[in-house]
Image (cartoon, rainbow, N blue to C red; front, side, top):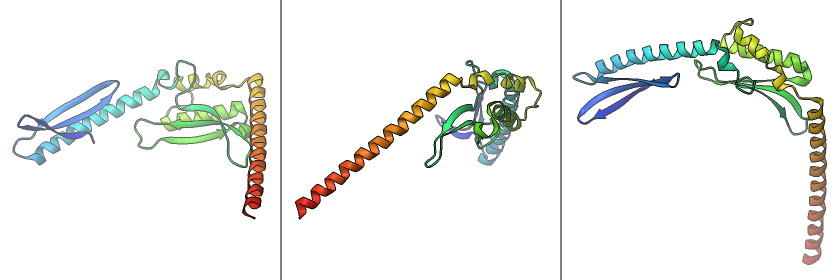
Length: 195
């Protein structure tokens, strides 16, 4: 609810405020004899604003421009490498979608190793369409399916990634070995010193 107490000099008001489409919408309800009656009127105005805000969000969600960014990527979808202790790095599509008319952010990941790049991307777009209530054959869905090249990793980039991962694993192993030998040397020195 977007209703606030507002004081202008000695006059009391309820300020009803919401923003959508880059514009602020507000109305004031003067509190005269009955604070309860003024608050009821403010709630009616807020309900009207909420309805208009949701309609704007729905209209935007149906447009292609809302989902596709200038670089050709999809809002809320990114390709990442998930690293977990004791497991090999996993290449996934991560979805983090903030549907304007829902309270919670929707999240999931779809594995590229399990489904393959094209199918994982298709499943990601289908999930986005499901969350926004878009039809699979809508203009926005078609435009999102055409964004696959922005998410594809070339074999050259993939081999660079694998080389970098192998080098970083080697560096970490070497650092652990060196740290272990240093701590062993310190422990031996401490034992000699205390003996």
